[in-house]
View 1 (tube, rainbow, N blue to C red):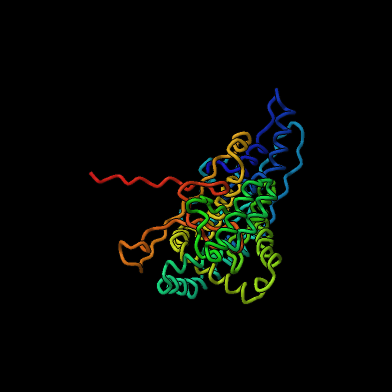
View 2: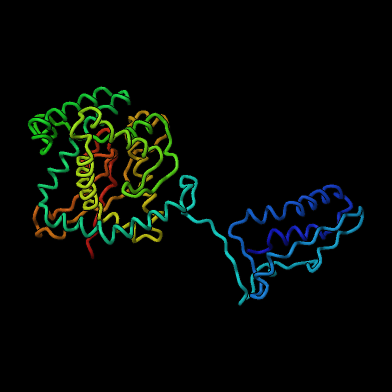
Length: 384
């Protein structure tokens, strides 16, 4: 590191005042001696070097107090410190114990509860590897893709009232009416939402995600602390409140059987299994990162910010300097159990739902209002 801050402070304290700048030099020297400990703590990383026998004893030693200054006289350095310390003296000698203090990427301002979150993340990961992942793999293997898609469409249709209400709260009556139309068409012609007939001809009403968490973000409410919770996984304080409200809409509007525990457990299980299947590659990629916890957190926070930004018009984003919303890369899912060349074996990219009810939905061919764009597909360069 060169000359450390403490060594520099000692050198300044030991140097005598010049005849021209006697007062200024003394002030600088006083400030250096006084503030040296605080400056040393502010440096990153901090290197501490000591022989093995003295590492434990250093914490018990108190630094010697600086001697009083007498005008016109040179203040001697503290006992045991050389008058002139070369730059190489601060470098640890070979064989010495070196303590390196670095800031962890897990501890950031957006994640004040990182210690608890990491412990929960590790516990959930262990349960997922032992139980959830094998069950989801068997679910994908046993249940045909058309059946899984039908169950997903039913849950998405049940979440349309949430989308409708939140478009109204975002002052977008046109999108709200389109959502209401989708719900009516799929609930009738689509056989209770089993088939997404609204997106087909002649209706051309695409599915749009929305929820209370998006409404909060749209009106400027920040994320709050990042959280990693059992069952729910990654979220934030804002998104957690929004999810609770999302889950309350359908039971409140329609009553029984949507307010029964059997319904909540059944739909929650189907949603979780569908999501676990669709994001198997994303989970694998996050776990292969240098720090799986940080990779999972960053993916979630970037995705949610892109979804909130996508709710604003292009003119608003340009006026406010908000970048165009692009989702972080989501690896496509491939069903290894499907016959090669079949429709079930075709790679698919799904986008996580913003609500607490709907499972992941297939990425649209072109971004629609409230849905961020996907990153452009990497072009394959043929080998020479």
